[in-house]
Image (cartoon, rainbow, N blue to C red; front, side, top):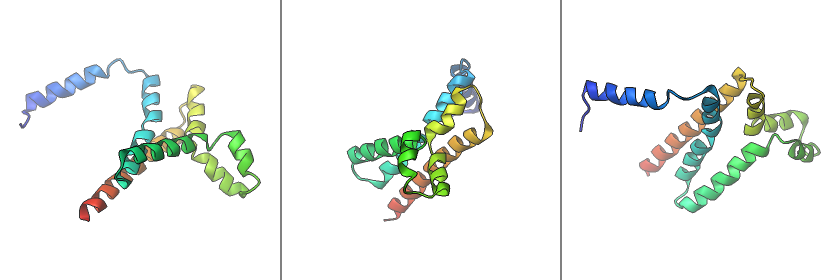
Length: 134
């Protein structure tokens, strides 16, 4: 069923009203939480089993979270060159979110999360299109 202009604007107004009470903290939480489902969608598109997709997604999200922890970085410092160690640390979801927890929303942190979301959703779209071609 096709929506008319008034139905579309009514739906849009209802959506805006639902999000009217969002605070900046809520928006930050959405920004922080969104890469995981996007990653899960991309990994789910790679597998036929949803159970395997869940386990792989949980492991990948865990790795993206802990890569910036000092314990892990200290463990990897003996094996990786400093430049590669810094690159690994820069992929940490937690590392980028810690600055936001202090109340400072830096542009590079917001760009990181938005880029991660876009990258994972783009990968998902590519994987789905490649699977459709088969």
